[in-house]
Length: 483
Image (tube, rainbow, N blue to C red; front, top):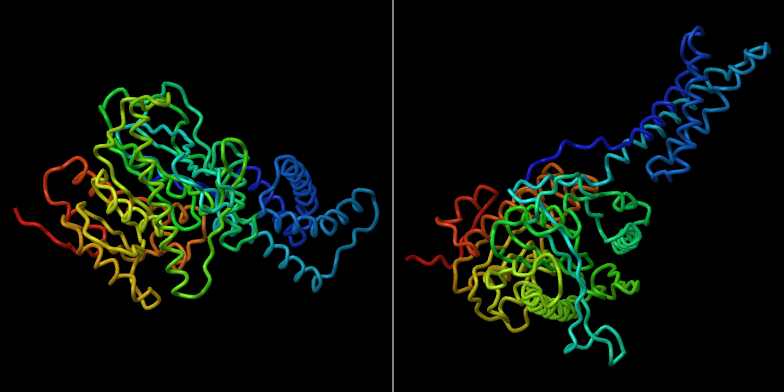
């Protein structure tokens, strides 16, 4: 995964508004010879940029900038217009203008600061030898009732997004919309994610403007044979696209990644018929009750993962036409997930030996009947501190020790729970929220450790993966088997 050049947080139009508004405010304090032309030029820039933003729809970060410009406009423009008309030029006294100017400049500075803190995400460019394609599928398990509804005829339906090695395009292709197949779907999902996090919907309104590097429905790569498959379950309330940077990096190295939306658990799942299924999961605050609920949600997700693996086998056979017919090797499959999705991946693997390996990304196990695992497991965990659940590592350790294969726990310094997702690319860089690494570092580290483990387990790369894993943090090896 290569780091893209950091995108400036403001568009050219937004930057024009910021510069014009700042010039409008500071014109009052310039020498008389340049005061009037500066005020007129800045006012013209504010009006033009404001009109253009009104047409395109301003981001919320620009609201304080526009407010400052509106406040400053009459005070800056009136003296200049009076002078042009030959009337005496009267300005506000300095003791009134000074705090007013300071207030306006503070509002103007708030805009770029907010745009930097909550930007439109820029995805790191995948570093593998393959271009990346993506496609979305909807699958219904006719054998399984939907437990979240009272309709006896309702059957469990999941939405999966696949990222895969694709053929290189000769022209500049259209990149995939982030968070959904369409911008309307992306806006629905962004609003649901904000609501689930307890944030106003406008805070994440930049997410639907983002594009990833994958090309929708691109032809599969001509070389590479059949690709191993990596199934992914997101965190509680998370959505299939929450680890897009990770998924694209993995796919660029020759894997098919299939990430799932879990209806009534994911923040919002938009179905092909246009219905939107919102989450019904919520904590009660009672530890025993919440653990029982978590175990139930984990079991449902594990069943979704097992069902998805079956459908991917059918996709490889050509049961459903698509770019990946004959290209998916479900005999080499890893169950992966973040947070509750990691718990689901562990449970799915224990229940289904079709999974060759497991990757648990900072997820505590929720298995009411734990047993041995025949698969190797990689557990990535956030930095452990005084606020970490004291039961987390002991429970995870018992799970890793129950594997009959060599398993690994990698604790990455400076990370928080959301470091392993796309969140650092668009949330404020607060250590308690997204960890202390630079914005692209979380997805990069997660992908690098994942690839090391996948190459060792699904491709049987020679050598011990432990040295490469330990380069990313503190590594503990469980159940190492000697030849």
